[in-house]
Length: 175
Image (tube, rainbow, N blue to C red; front, side, top):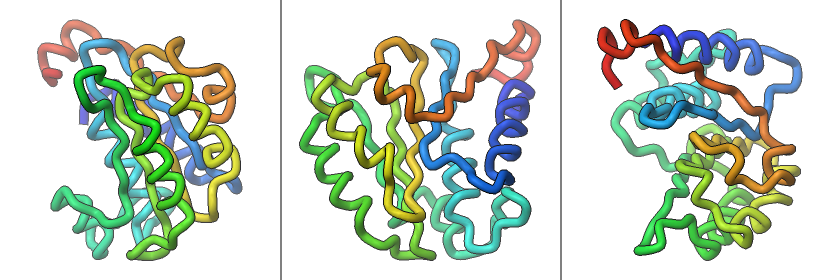
């Protein structure tokens, strides 16, 4: 794992190990990079059936489903269509899904990729569920432009900033 992601993961582990781990996270990453691996690592730790001190076991059914790329308790909200926005209909569908018990272990994770592509209506539709999610429901947002998110939504998120990798790190580890 690249050093700039290791730094962020240590912050995540500290939060996961706390008595009240966040239920709404937001990874703020530098433009031109990605935090997909980090997002899945966090989702795996949250949904793991045999998590040890915040780390996923990598052996249970839940971990295996994530490794295979499909997990019934992970929903992805991403920009779509010509406008490239996260549509309110998809948000409403996800809000309904958040109230359903997860298929494996009971928990659910909603990954909001490119959260800066939420329009005002979509952001507002997420506010209440992000503020008071059903037990076991976790939201993981990611963006490189935090200023595009509504301040009321940002106030409900645990913001974790990924540092810019050095040129040497960038060359050694790639994007």
